Image (cartoon, rainbow, N blue to C red; front, side):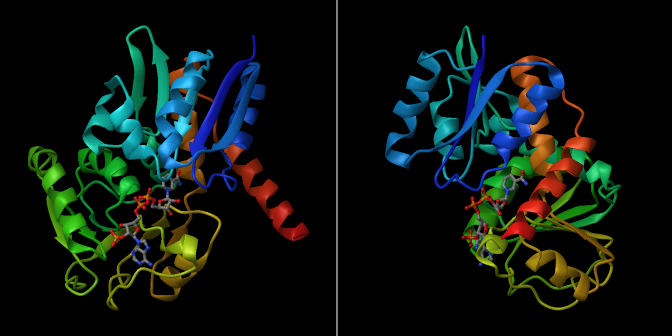
Length: 282
Ligand code: NDP
């Protein structure tokens, strides 16, 4: 029987997830149908309930529904509970299990890129849902420090308060800052852009000097080179976008649904080629 899956977002037309999961299914010899479903926030809960009542095998959830999905889940895995956000639903005998694969996906991609994390000073721009999803796994890699720099200070402070216990247990200095207060007072080897500024074609504000010692600048967003180009111009030695994270978080979701983790390296290469060909046509 064909396994039914979907990603729910608003908007969601740009999503690459249907392409990725169709490819994973083909590679694994699993017959599946994975669609992108645009659902307004007011209809999210009923749409998800109906989807699983009809026998769906799983779902992904993206902006702006990750917090609503967290509230809707009957049970949560550790990553989702920690983040307060769910990006993957798995139906179980005990109801809907809410999971979060954003953090594991990012860490896998940072490993692929041999990014400096353990013992490094890390600057994270943004404090939204994506950053909450990746902070726990990042802290467990024991960087020397993580500075969360967000336009809205209260949001950075809330995130620091939420993760203070894990930071203390891992002996990581975790700080909140704003673009106005953050100084280039330490060598940030890794800068992660977890803001959605790239989606608007803009850059998060930051005082000069933060990229002077940057080994890798990484934009969680993909489909724009605004941040990666600016980071290299500002002194970063390398810059990458979040397409690899997208493929890796998808592979972790596929593993939760089918018990089999797809090989991702070729899928990422082919997805980049597919996007390049489409861009060349438009
Ligand atoms: P949220 O809406 O939850 O958070 C947005 C964040 O960006 C907030 O910290 C917000 O700051 C900040 N921000 C938005 N615009 C600007 C701007 N112009 N200047 C400075 N800061 C800005 O979004 P998410 O956390 O869910 O997503 C963030 C990014 O991560 C998106 O680009 C998304 O595509 C990407 N992502 C990528 C994934 C992948 O697999 N590659 C997975 C998940 C997300 P403030 O609090 O001040 O409003």
